[in-house]
Each structure stands twice: as structure tokens, then as C-alpha cells.
Image 1 (cartoon, each protein chain N blue to C red):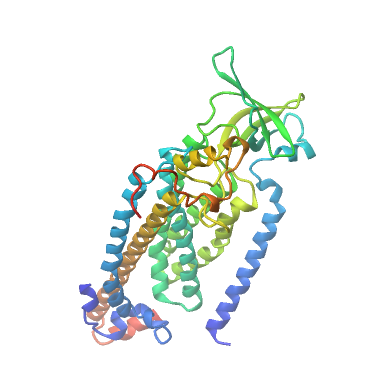
Image 2 (image 1 turned 45 degrees about the vertical axis):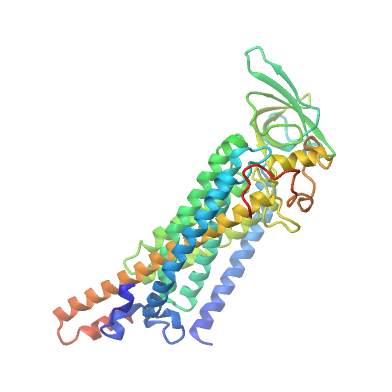
Length: 173
Length: 278
């Protein structure tokens, strides 16, 4: 066995050891690596009262109510859902631009004894779809997609779609 | 390019770094590398400028806005290529480190040394543009989710490699330490890539490399791909230029050292240098 081959084998073995060690560590810390919990997780195992955690899911269609608080700050209530379960969230403050019904959100706060999640922070969670406004309008108009109800239809159905007229300013390709 | 034509004074003086792997690897010879790289460099730089001259205006002015992010989506055309380069460049660093550790390839040492500052720069740009994008869209500059944290670790690995290879008086020792760090850090690459699938994160999952179809409309996808190609060519051109400069620098240093030794020991200069190499 030449020196080079021996170095190659040592390197491969080290890589294998390091790789499996990392994989085992990450698997062991699986639960601590989640950024947020879903309403179903909460329903299955409620976190201890008074403990702050992040709750994530979609803003349920038709659940958003806004009131002006006494101090002039908007007081918002909405439901965060992941399908099977939903949690009502109360939040006082300014919402991110992307906040809307059907949008993914991640909220940080505490679950009250009344089952209402009092959030101190609401972040919008963008999904992985990008489309021009004309294409989104076309999908909405033809009934293929209701953004309030959730994620866009499979990308293959729209990512080469030409809306009625070519979008303004689009360069020839 | 002029330097590529310089006649070597003696094989061991002009190409001291090639001593290890010349018999096995054609491109381990710095002279050959300089000649080849000198020919490739103008084409690479030209292609990068040309593709970016097409891609950037297309992406920043002529592509449509996103239906809900509006014009802010244009950060995508910088952020995503920088993220790809941060990871692709690190893959290059890992491969170069294997070449350097196993085959003691001196050019790989130099290329890795010159690669890491550029890699750190693109990773910093990826983090900065992501932060600027996160504030208006998510509502926060930064969160400690798995994707953002693993990219920050990637940035520190780039910085650490750049610092470590320069921290030793003995360049070869520095290169070996850097290669070990780079290979240990390579376990972070799949973590960066799959963090958005293995764990729930605030960062959205991949859009382009989806199994079925990219979830970007082609009017956004095509300018993104052209920008990514342009930035990749520019990245390669930068790293190549830095590596050429490093090879030339090393050559000049070896020549100066040899000249100094010759002046000191008129009869024995050559063998003293060879002794230092071995």
C-alpha cells in the first residue's frame, strides 16, 4: 500500500466517522432543532404553561379580526392551523407586509390557560413559489388557486404559463 | 501572461512547489498551470462580464415583480447565486483539500488558500442580502433557525480557513491544517442544503432544485439562472486570478531566496534550497 493510498483510506475513514457522528448528533437533537411547533404538536402535547415557544402554521382563511386597542396599537386575532388542528393567536403590534389569510406565519409567545396563544412577535413565512402578478391573477381568476386557502397548485401547472398578455417589461427570450 | 513566458533559471528554482507531485500530475507543474491559466483568464473574465451584462439588467429591470413580494423579490437574483456559490465554492475547497492532503498537490494548496477569502466574501453577501430581504418580508433581520445558523457556520468556516492557512510560518503546514479544517467543515454542507427539509425553519424550502418542477415562474427563473452563471464565472475568474498571482508570488520569492543564498554561499546555494524543500 503506497503512502498516498494509505492517506486516502485514513481520510475516508475519518470522513465516515465524522459523518456518522454528525448524523447521530443531529438525530439526537432533532427535537431541539425545530424552529417552531405546529398546532397539532400543541394538541398532542401541550407545552408547560408560562413557557414561551414558537407556533407556526397557516393563517386560517376568514379568521383574522382587527381591532384598535385603547393605546392606538392594532389588536389582531387569528387562527393558526396546520389542517387537523388550529390555535387562536392574539397579537398587539404591527404585522409584517406578507401577513395575510392563507400565509404561513411563525409566532413567538405563550399559551394562556384559556387556550389563546398570546404572541409577542409575528413573522411571515414565505413559501417557495415566485410568480409574476399577472400569473397569480390568472390562476385566481380561473379558479385554480385561492391564496387564502393555502399553497399554490403544483408548479408544473403554472411555471411556464403565459397570462393573457405578456407581462409589461418582459424581455424576449 | 508575461510571467508565463519567463524562462526558468533552473527546474528546482523556478518551480519549487512542484517538487511533490510533478511525476504524477501534469497540472501540478506551476509553469504549465501559469501558461494554461494565462490563456484561460481573459476568456473567463470576458465571459463573466458578458453574462452579467445580460443577466443583471434582465433580472433587476426587465423581469416581472413577484405577485406578493413586489419589487423586493429582486434581492433573489443576488442572494441565491451567492448562496449557491458559498456552497459550491466550499465543495471546491473540500475537493482541493483532499488533493492537498492525499496527493500533496502544491497547486491545490495555493488554490485553496486563494479560494477561501472569495468564498467568505460571497457567503457574507449571501447573509447580508438575506438579512435585508428578511426584514421587509418576514419581519425580522435574523432568526436562529437551522438554515440561517448553518449558513453562519459556513461563513465562519470560510473565515477560519482563510485565517488558519495564513497563521503558520511554514506555508505547507498551514495548508495542511487548513485542509483538515475544510474537510471537517464539509459535514456542514449537507446540513445547509437539507436544513429546510429536515427541520421546520423560517426560511422557505428550495425553489429551483425541486424534484418535480421549479416553483418559480420562468420569467423569474431564467434571469436567475443567467445571473447565477454570470456570478459563477466571475467567482471562477477571481479565484483563478488570485491563484495565478499566488503562484507568481511564490516563484518570485523562491528566486529571491535562491539569489540571496547564492550570494551567501556561492558554491552551495542550490543544494541548500533543495534541502529546505525536502
